[in-house]
Length: 417
Ligand code: URA
Image (cartoon, helix red, strand yellow):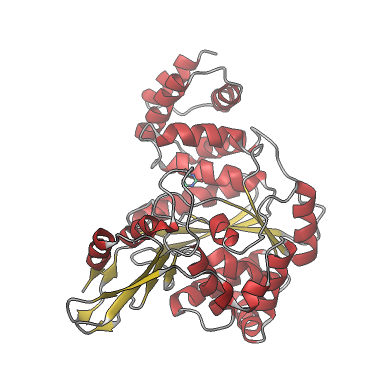
């Protein structure tokens, strides 16, 4: 088989065979096909697409391109959750202890934040001592005993995705539905989960700009699950404003604690209850989402979900005194209120702008080498639908940087009335 022929086939809109996709992934991972040829194939896939069958085959070939974990000896079904990325999205950190306190098992690998989106690992690392590098055996033991573990990407899992993602990033081929779907699903499936809940975001802060596009991506990923024998469900949720009130690592952990103590923002609590109910049914702990939701609410109210979070943080080496007393988290030196210049009802809060500004305040990274200031970020005082009077505080900036004038100007423009 010659790789040029595979490029030609896709360029001409043909359906690639299992043998062609296998040849592509196997030889690319083995460094036998150069990046310039794979770039051409990626662009052909970007332009001509792939059908569900091809996308499922691509996912499976990527999944088995490296190490595959086997969690089948842990009792119960292994659940995983994936959000396609958002601003202020700390759902996994609330949802995990909520469902684990009801008997489910969350086995999760997470990523770091880049650009305007935050990463679960960075948020966890704002807790002193928290260890994201558990070994395979430690990870399994913690899932078995605590009911949840969240770790960083194992470098040996899905090497095909690592190479392809880096190449897509520099060849304008990231936003292709089959390429996004196979990238997300191959990593999730390599971890050995039985059921996966996807939260596919749309809006200015998300990969998919419209609800329709997000639904297309969600359906492709559900179909991959069906073809590969896994229970995959998806929610399609909007990112027309940040999720909750806090954006930025330690600020978000404090919001996680509040939410687990039943004092969290309504939108965040609702999303966690809805997602948790779906996952408890997927995990076969409850037969209906209504029963599952009741159990989740009970465990929020009786403190069991919060206790599970403390147990999880402690199991991974985190200093639990910060969770019990969040005033211990370092606070940024400058806390700058942003005052509204008009009165009205908030119509939209551009999540992309808020995410980028939080990054500029020190709360995120522009390149993977940047160091994050865990105390930096933005706390919203107003959300969509809230009434605002001129001179009222819209949000506060938390930063150790001194020159924030241009950021202040951008943040105020993120609010539409
Ligand atoms: N997240 C991934 O893991 N891969 C993509 O292609 C896009 C988002």
